[in-house]
Image 1: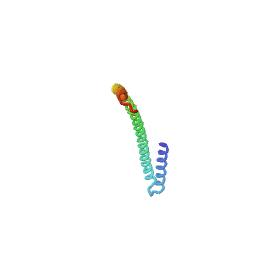
Image 2: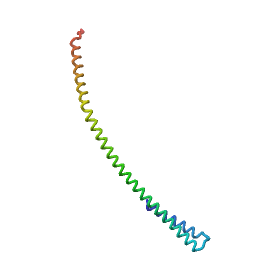
Image 3: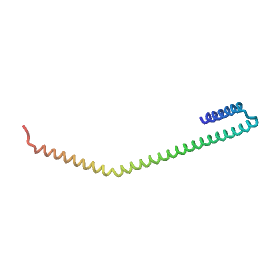
Image 4: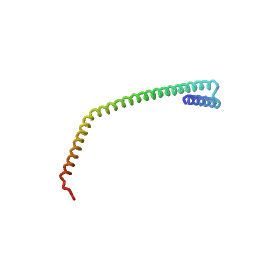
Length: 122
């Protein structure tokens, strides 16, 4: 794509320059000077655009690398945070399960006692 852009710019510059030379009332020497200035300016602008494209590619590459680095660091931090949470939460979860088991046992015992003491119908 870069080559197509440069080729298009150069072709346009040459075509514009030729058209201008053929349709001018100036002398040959004046036209030569103008053509030289025109080509110098065009060359400068093409080189400037080429340099800007290189700078843009470098910036995109750096941004991509920084993004990858940040994503890796973020994933690592999230993994550590999740592991820390599980480590801290595990004793609490165990205590909750133990209390739930005791509560379940108490409910079953109470249910049995109520069944034993309830008057029979019949």
